[in-house]
Length: 251
Length: 223
Image 1 (cartoon, rainbow over the protein chains, first blue to last red):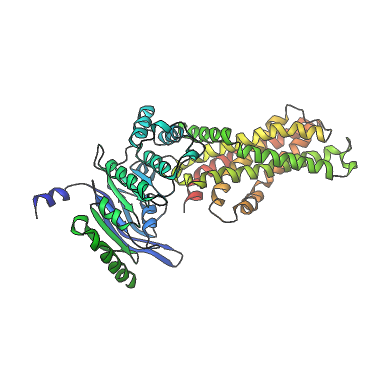
Image 2 (cartoon, chains in turn yellow, purple):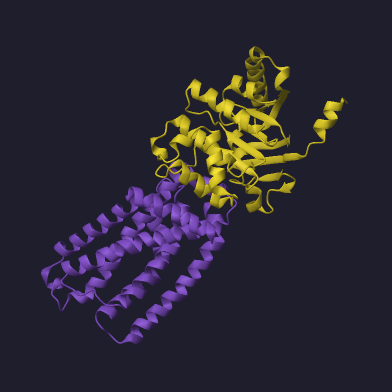
């Protein structure tokens, strides 16, 4: 075991799922999934539609209950102290969770009050600056482009400085340029000030590989493969992904 | 309480910008009142007879416009997934419920304040009596308390506009009957004891249905 590995292993586990099962009626979506993410991990979760990526993120975000299995966030079981666990999470989805008839400033102030963010006015200005929306802060969100709305959604998610970020297809509906800009922003924010743990789902294989340290492939309700990003060349990823998915789906 | 206020203030601020909920509720209650005024036989609108039906008609206008408002208040939350944004926050579900309930109550009371004198003019019927204030307040509070939790439950269903009244009117019925009887007694200047009994009933109902949804809101909004 190298010194680097020993150092990596000493990082605290921020997300742990153990034998996670989620069924909708008789249809199992997750079938005994195990997952472990440590502080500072940036992990991309890939998988075909219906593989259970969103379901997994919804369970981790406390929005859905697992049928069986356990989840711990920062060492706290998910079924205990749900309210305080939510303060550890920043969630970005293809839905923005924003109020279109309020402006950016009002949206962030509202969420800041719910998260009890200290020095709220200064923090709102700080995150607006980070996502490059300080000049549009008093415009209604309705007047924003999709890319701007998604940047504001990122500002909302990091407002309370969460140690864990869950990103569910954050680039959906964005053109390539906007998606690249968003990817850069997310990457910067992941290492901004503290070592955040990031779990992201995407259908864009290349972007997922470029942004993250580790790739997980979900197929047939289980983690079918796991690779560190630097062990895969972009041109190998597609074959690796489709081989894994077809094998995982056949199980 | 700060989180309750934050949810309430957010709803009121958004509504002041769009007036979506208010305009839908007000126009509906105005139309309902106009239809009643023109469709009912003239003999029922006679000053001696109108007292028998007016309180009921008034509460029909209040409650059906209230259903519209309840539906709208959660559609706004559903549009961009902001209901999930609320549920992701480290806020007690009861605080979210109370904030939404108070904003629904405010919108309903505002519409009722405007429609009641219009109703009085159209029916040539005096609706001015200060005792009407606690009657309307307690009746509307019960309506908003139950309506808010049922609207939250119905929002994830396809037929939510139909489902909401079907689900919650049976539970609301006792308070609507009490409110209608109390309104009738107040406007007919009947003995105060009659009003007091109905007010006491509504007060007990409102307290019970304030506590229950606070405890149950988590189950109502959870997947």
